[in-house]
Length: 533
Image (cartoon, rainbow, N blue to C red; front, side, top):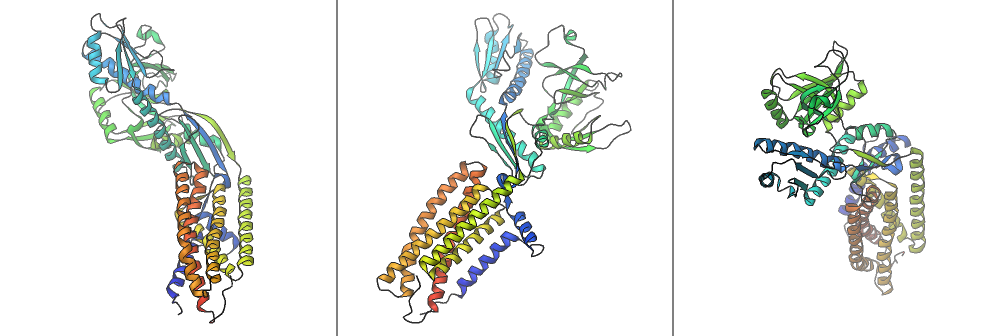
């Protein structure tokens, strides 16, 4: 009895049309160039095919630890003053051991009171210990230190990703680099200007607002000893002096607002004095902090600090909530970079470049050429072998292989996946597994024919016995590819992606499409006519 295959054939053609749309979209023309442009718009090329920038960054996590302990130093000093306890709060070795804070000069007999107060306020984050010299040491707990360093790397990755996204880079790879501690891998396809990449990625442009204690030329104004909660910064004298010369300002170490308190920034045009700058907007929480401070310090000075340099000093004439402005003699490129960096957030720590290189577009084009040649040559060799070894049924296998490739590329087009050189290897491996599936089915059909069964029954039994083995082999390989995708870096993920898509397509073509072709062929055979296999 002949089978009605109209619905199945319609399904196959429908899948084919959908996948062709996934590959080409709606091309603007039918020429080779137009079709190639349509494909490249749907299927992105990876760094190794398109060319681009490859960087490995080392995050200086001690910067974040120093920033955290600097805040703690200021809070501890304020607590001591609140409870009228004597003590000098310092960090003995901020370079090698930024997690250690020491309090010296404590009144005799008061060390126990200081330790109790510190335990109440900082005991969850620091280990607190007293010494025979009447001093107290705070050491950040190992778990807290590790969590802070890990958080810093994650924030660094997110900030860099935000900046790269603003640059419009397609399919960048920004992820932890597993071959070193606190390192980040950055791959930017299509980007060749490493200087521009460095400027955007590493630009800290950390704008912050600090309370000004005075404007001095050195340590003399503070009696030769700098209080632990203050620091000296060099910068522009506008706002305090009229001679236009740089000054050294004594400012509070802990900012009033800064970093994550900024929500938005935009460039402003040149004003009447020939200067241009950036308007910035604070978050709601940052605006409330700024309002509370400016309300309580009308008539005092505050400084706008960019990086480690004072850019402006002004008198607080009234309460300010959530908007401000920084202006100066900036170039347009500096203004654009500053506003861009403030919008995307400051890096929580500085970075060092461990490795940086570019992959030329010509090398990428050569990789594409060689990869395509390998894939086409492999596919042609397989198709010829199937035609020779399985005769007429080899056409069935060849059609299934062709459709397998179309479905794979359609998947990649719809998912906007990135095709890498290892991804091309995944395509070739998929072709091999597609052939393996057909061989399993065809050999089983041959066995059934040798057992004396007719073409229709042989096809039914061949698929019935082979498809379970095919599913098992594909599922195990898909699980392996999924693990590669979860734990691998960019090129490895490219291989895993194409392999998974290809295996899913192969299940469809080997079990469904090939079966429909066989059934259609059997429907048109005369009684007693043998199957060409």
